[in-house]
Image (cartoon, rainbow, N blue to C red):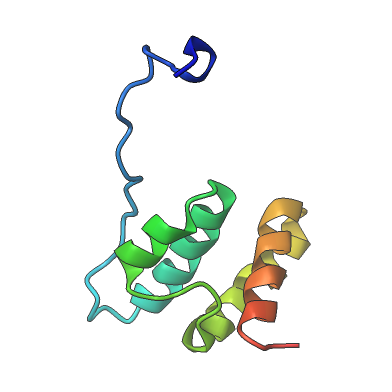
Amino acid sequence: MSRAFVNEDAGDAGEPEFRLPDPDSPAYEEAAAWALIQGADEGDSRSAEKATGYRWGDPLLSSHVQAILKQAEESGEDRVAQLARRFLRAAGVR
């Protein structure tokens, strides 16, 4: 392999850590929605899906993602709003 493609100094970052409440917590779904948005922003939706047990675009999280979208639009967080819209499209929400 060409040395141009080898980063010998790169550490093994492992999978990202998502801090989630207990799955039985009433706040779990909202935290899972945020984790999926965060994972997508970091280019690692798979780890977020694995950590939360939800898939990108899961309709069960739509109301939480709609709230995230509203908050992001109000506070000018364009990237979060963009990802929330993508999630909602994947969930079939218009």
